[in-house]
Image (cartoon, rainbow, N blue to C red; front, side, top):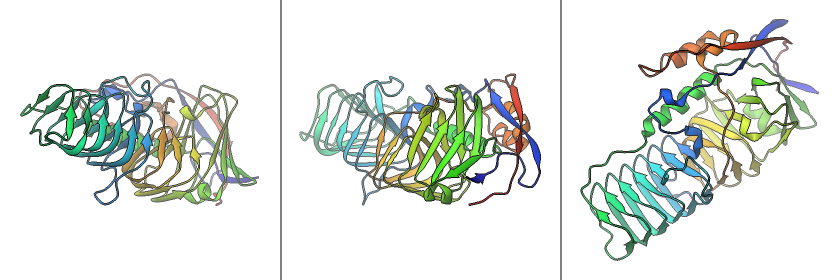
Length: 366
């Protein structure tokens, strides 16, 4: 077997101590957020789709974005129990253009909403206008601007215009949470080795938080990833590259470990291309312009921007992410990074415990 990336805090030493944090997590309530951001099946800090290439597929859970949304032949929130249980299925900072269906909830948009052959199973709240070529809105239309649709769009509830818009969720705070989280865990040194055997990446984890670093090239060259460990383990896979691309991977979880406790973190990626396969893993790439033309992700897909037509099924990260104070041996720099961005008045640090273990450190090999 080939060691892809050695565990440890040094690539040149022989022995080192590695901290495996337990029991403490980043608290999203330190931000001005009303529910756990990982409840978003899909979240883009920027746009989803473009004016010339609308996003065309379906997301089984709820979605959010800081910019504009362009959807065609699209379905959202097909599973009623997915998400935090709010009356909104789509949160957008800008405009929304939709052909398809918004299920089990409505739309909240800071800009205008264009219903172009779409059905919205809830209320539309906008900072701008309601416009479009046809469709139905099963709830109310509460508009900061005007109703420009006329007869083509049927609103079954009440239409109110000129209503001052106040978002129920601060999307900039959600974006900040994902950026902070990605930066924090991206600065954690590896605690766990990843081994390559016959084209499959093998990772064994322990109870608590485990960190492994794997390059984009190694992921792209493998046909699968097998993760084995107890149900109370969390695995963070850091991919350090600025440009990340990989194709179909088989994700296999054993001995209690699950996709819900695994987070693929692309903290430094500015571009990310993903295609084919069923990627049963949560993906955190908040700075990456993401191209997902086809394939399936089961879990979170968090991106800087998103284009394509890949499907995203319900799932989400339920593992632990340490407070900066739990990192101890895992790197002071990462602690300082998040502490510097913490909101004024946030709750103070909680006590932390750590389990230290010895590891053998070898050189990196691709």
